[in-house]
Image (cartoon, rainbow, N blue to C red):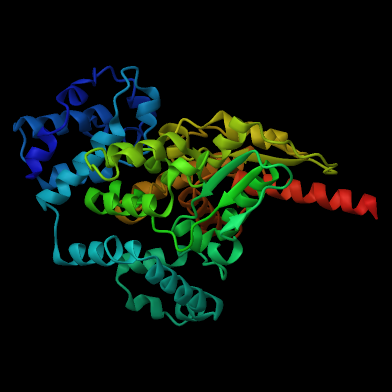
Length: 442
């Protein structure tokens, strides 16, 4: 299918659905940055429609505009017409990639090595993680900076290097058994998704997620050597690879066997819930994808849905905690009240509401690479509000937000408040409860 046909194949009513009312403008971070119509959701939709109509050529400027969008989906929460902007943006970015208007040899090589090789081979990705762990644990990363060896890197890589995430020594398959029983009576059977970056950097969050599920009557199945979910690819115009990875997930997990499929990464979950649309034209997978999308739940959403058990213990003090809403959890999955309900249930925690809690922090997948200046300004805006909250703990439910906020504090202050997934705080509360009971029994 040609790039033009790709846009023309869309249900044209989706492009026409935008009423140009302007309700999206005040919530769009890029429009707030520039004040330019083309940098707003309705402006981008107008550009997409012009390309689909053949009134506008696919140029580098069009490609740059689609790249400048964060994809935070705040516009979808504000839109009174229910425009499916996420789908439009994915199609537009795929159109750009197939048009090759911004292709270069270097860019094509990087995309092939990362998106189509590294992130489609779990074994290779984990091997790369092991090598990076050794580099960090041995102190070679610090030495390379001290002796200016990082200056041999291209400028952009040199700027990004200090923000390289710290790799865990033990990945999810080493921390979580394939099948783990519920604590007490089994009420539900669920499948657990461990992710790719989440697995390498936040395997402890995956372990905590399983612990919390077990405490709430869930038997947990966690497939080995899981693939990337494909969100990175879909959000960056590679729907072909996204479909390949979706099929691999469905091969590993039969959704008909479980009450829920659990994700704990907001950006991944937003994509995972749309496997039905992604594979709608695949006769071998469409049926299973439909079931999958119905059963996909964010961990915080699922806990509230099943009536999670509130931990009981004397925390002995009050800990101020604030909550940053990951864009794709809040706007993409419409999960907003549930994290707060869970945080408020934890003894000793005082939830401090964050100003502009739903405003994007600037992480947005690979946005820090493609749009570093805007990403940095959004990061600083978020850090200012976090400091003003006075909280010693920042809770957020997406690995990209977690890393971006943490790195921002470290670069600015040399230190950071604790940044943590809400499910980790709940797991710690359950653990404290058990320890308290154990001490009393002794």
